[in-house]
Image (tube, rainbow, N blue to C red; front, top):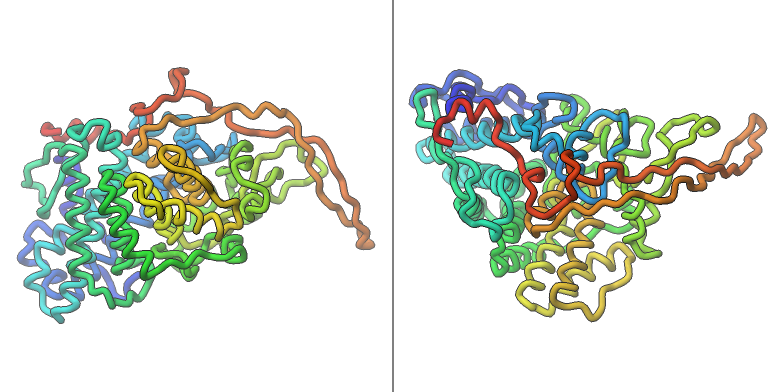
Length: 505
């Protein structure tokens, strides 16, 4: 892996991003014994926090805002997001050209994952000898394992098909030691091996991070985040008993589901009680907020407002479900309504805060309920439908009744689509369940749009006019073949420069 190793001759910790209160070490790391930063536990924590900032805030284009760009790509390539035409960002993902064409997202995904892994390997290689409090040493060590495990989970779920499709499919290399320019580049491991490494790291983190640890900020790994990641990773790896166990343990500690007011507040604040894990933003450090220019489709502050919903998606919600009331036809935010002639199905789930800032959600309790429901459905546990209905009840949706077997699984997967829209799970769910993308053209060419105008005297007039309605326009793969399960168009590709530089791939 020569290309990666050459780039990692220094720590990529150039931004503190407001996540730590002191400067970060950026000097060369070829001679690890001379590195001052790793001589103390506090120094290693600087590397940990800086690595997180780098992962979440690094851009290689405005359409690639850090790790969040992979979440946005997952939804853009799914069933329910319709990318608005002539708007910047993720259109090539929506049309399945980006990953298959080895474009910028592939390079960013690969480089960010392995830079982060290498930084965690540096921490883990030095932390046992670091000066500082023993309890803090264990905690920082556990958090380094957690972040490395999170990266291997990303690689396992993005660079190979479902583990049961081919457990021995080659994926990406596993590195457990710091690399330098002299290190031997690695061979690709199997998808089973990469999942096992992710699980091993996360289980080690669970042992090391104290259950009573209270983190300073919500981006940090605590016991709850690790339990959630273990539930998620075991679900993806089809370890149903473990997915059930870890999600059960987390729900005992944290079972809160937000109410309607909270749900409609914009999905922009890590202080939301249902958020288990999120990436905070401040006026001074807000690069990751750029993602809301894609997600926020109803605000005048949004540049692109491009992640609209499939009109048929709204039909999946029952009347009375308050999520349905958030999905409506509308022209571009701020458009001159008298001149507007085109509408898209706008889902008002994501909204900027004042000043174009928005925190990034990474894990919510509702996901844990649905992981628990799916694992229990696989195990024929009767509590599965109760966990599904807990989410439905919180959203004022009609409860599921008399479901079992595959019908229950389909209901759970549908609820994941409705509940987790825009949060980065669409393509991952399609791949892990060996499904095909499902899109169809919206057949109704015109819809009525009603708005109110007010004259200078404050008199109001309600106007209704027909506008052109938009739905899916990318209805097959770039080669014009139909969407199918287990298509290479769904998978991240190893960057071409990596293939050239690493003869062992």
